[in-house]
Length: 517
Image 1 (tube, rainbow, N blue to C red):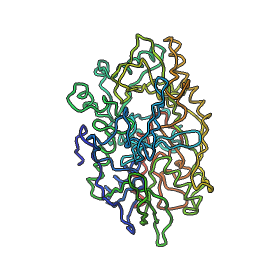
Image 2 (cartoon, helix red, strand yellow):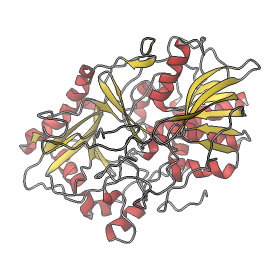
Image 3 (cartoon, one colour):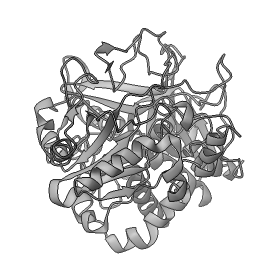
Image 4 (cartoon, rainbow, N blue to C red):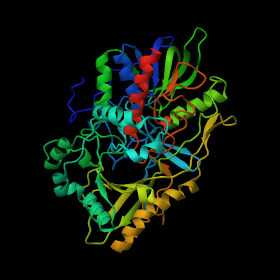
């Protein structure tokens, strides 16, 4: 399976139909199957450790009635959203009209999780966030790294772990000569021209899409994927998600089981050592069919920044893990995400065919605190619109807390905290609008609303390295418990975060395997 063709169907690790049996004992249990969890499981298994991975979402290995595993962005169905009866698309309006629609409740692939002041988009399924992101695989500039992870040696990251992560993820870059001629990147060429006319550097951004496959899509030689607008709800062919990289390597070890549709509810010290882990098994409509209890010598929290943080905050507050320190739940941020659109002049069409995989950005980080992806708007019609997702140097950080009245974890983010992100993004787009004589679109996020300031795709923090954990992710107060995902990173990476999450996991698990097993 490790040699699965990247352009073909997704391949995931083998799954027992009923998942982990109640009463089982495992050496290592990994909660989550995204970037951090997949790195941990692979390296533990390669070191001879038997691993059980538990995933709240589905396996995404079975085609639907249309013959495809994943739903298309332009026609969301029950596969698109996690346990919602109506879609909640990041782009909620188009030409002034709301575009969300009713869908059957289902354990779909994209979770739009609502907190006070912000909606956090997360991937649900074996492969985690890799299933639903745009695949922009960016290593931060070295000069920015000290502000991202101040306790980590940059030499080892840039010499060893970033290269290891980029190789493991299958990172590549669009072929510039093809980019310059491809119809599907007209929108990005318009973005480049306008950025450069206003004095901003345009940079090609690496991605985990199979670029050879995309070039074949453009000729009609293979089924369309990026050129069919697939991005938000999974990609059926060309994208190298974890289903095509780390997970087949995990399966090839023969030491890892994966239990999808299992939600961990508690982790507590076991009487004989190790930890007792409680979980619920779900059906595809979200019904709990079974509750299970297993024991594990060691537990790795890899449920994503939000999932890991919520679980740890709950376990500390309810007394299951009383020795966790007061840093758990703190220093959560949104990677400064803010979106906007611009209305171009009639002589700057952006193309009716747009590749859903972004491959370029505008870098104004040093001067204005913003890095803006030139993003697609794959509607199938000419819109004369340029669309952007900005990552900004937003300093605001929120905290997760346990609410005993509702028995839920709250987040104290405020929408007003997005204003620094808007101001930083404006450092780019006000200047482009002035140069081009253009205006902001006001019809994409509501009625007369310019900024998509209500969301993040890049949740980070909540169990920060060197604060809630030691410098390798060992949780304070409870030996044998580890955080190995984006919860370790305090709120911002200056670029798309998944390469940094992967590289940090590679660094940490190497140390943990060497010293703790």
